[in-house]
Every structure is written in structure tokens, then in C-alpha cells.
Amino acid sequence: MIKIKKLNSFYTITKIKEHKKIKKEILNLIEEGNFNSFDNINKTDWHFNKKTKRKYLDYFYKIITPYMNKICKKINAEHWKISNGWFQEYTKGNFHDWHRHMEDHFANVYYLHLPDKKNTTKIKDPLTGKEFNIDAKEGDFITFPAYVLHTSEKILSDKTKIIISFNSSFGGYIKC
Image (cartoon, rainbow, N blue to C red; front, side, top):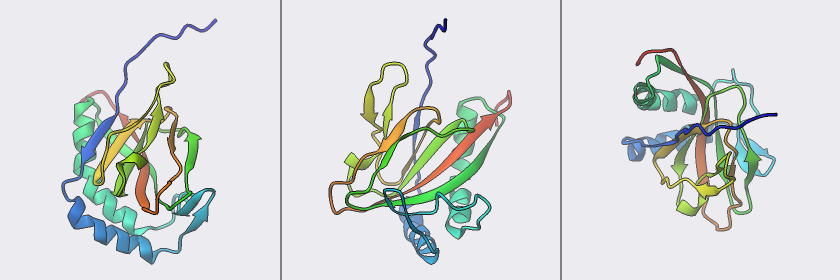
């Protein structure tokens, strides 16, 4: 017999204050890459080898470092790391089915281009089954437990959504 006890967790919404300044640069760096469709996603590099050099990720990781440090401190961790990152471009009809991320503590999504707030990430509470869209907007990045089921529902409009996703873990016993 397995008894399930409730343990509250969290998700974060973090506003990237440099968003307007960096958006065009990141989009240009993504355009330099040779990316194609995968499954039901218009363009992505998710399926690339983790060691593949991607200029947009190098640039993006420098931007989010102070934000990740703040999350690290807030949760009383000693350090953090990113294990993998990728981008996804969704156009009309594209979607990403319900899934989880394995081998990492947290999944993260940065909304690089989000003209319609209805297209944020939907998550499913693992105990109640309740589904809800995270109330984020363009320029935000969200962090949530990687074991939580989540999806990007089908894009119904002609408005393109572009995200950068990455997996992260936090460790140690003392603050960053």
C-alpha cells in the first residue's frame, strides 16, 4: 500500500527586466541556426545533442544568471545548474502534448514572444488533477517542478509563440 501525503510545492513567475532589450538579439541568434520542425512544433532544437553550440543559449544564460541566483537564495539552496536548453516556435495548429521532464528538479519556460496570453503553459496539479494556465506574459520566465505534467495547447490563432525552455536543479544546504 502506498500512502500519499500532501507536500506543498511552488512555481515561480520571474519578469526579465531586460526583455525588450534582448528580445531582438535572441531572435536574431535563433535565426542564425539551422532549425526545423519536430513532432507538432514548427521550429525547435530540442532534439539536438546537448553539447551542440547555440549562441542564443549562451547569451540567454548570461541574462538569466542573476535571476536564477535569486530563486536559489529564495529556496535556501547552495547552488544551481542548467542541464539542457532549447527553443520552440509554435505557429497555428502547433502544440506540445502533456509531458514531464525527467532527471531534473525544475522545468523552466521563458516567453520570448507571446502575443496571446492564452498560450502560456498549462500545468496539472499532481494531486487534484486540476488544470490551469500559468498567468505569465511575454518577458516572464516560469519555473515549476519538472515532475508536474504540463502542455502547450494547440495554437488556434495566426500569432506565433516563441519560448526558450531549460531544465534546472538546485542543491546544497545553505543559501547561494
